[in-house]
Length: 137
Image 1 (tube, rainbow, N blue to C red):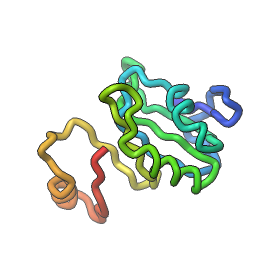
Image 2 (image 1 turned 90 degrees about the horizontal axis):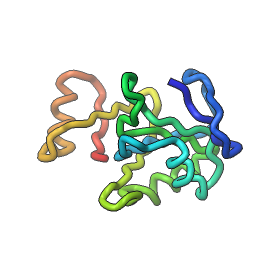
Image 3 (image 1 turned 45 degrees about the vertical axis):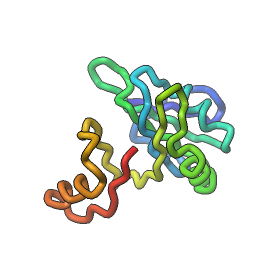
């Protein structure tokens, strides 16, 4: 999966393993037809963006409902988390923006609505050591 380099406002393909500078945030609640350009437009007014990635279904190449935005500074990343939590970007569609610890964040979709964070945490604590928090998006 390739990523888009947005530092110049142009979308250039970079290898998925390339580590770009900055601080990454997780963005959930995206629509199937969401594109990197859309995320860039939503967040670019906050400050410098070094990368935008959308997770895509390998077979159909559609958005899987989440992506990542990498900001040049932690201050801008924190602004994104603070200002865009539950941001309505399309009528009835809300974004969830969370800080991203790239090596320790797990995104899970398709859970029953009545499952609260405590039930999900309890379920995963039985399988994995060190579950610290569960945040609904």
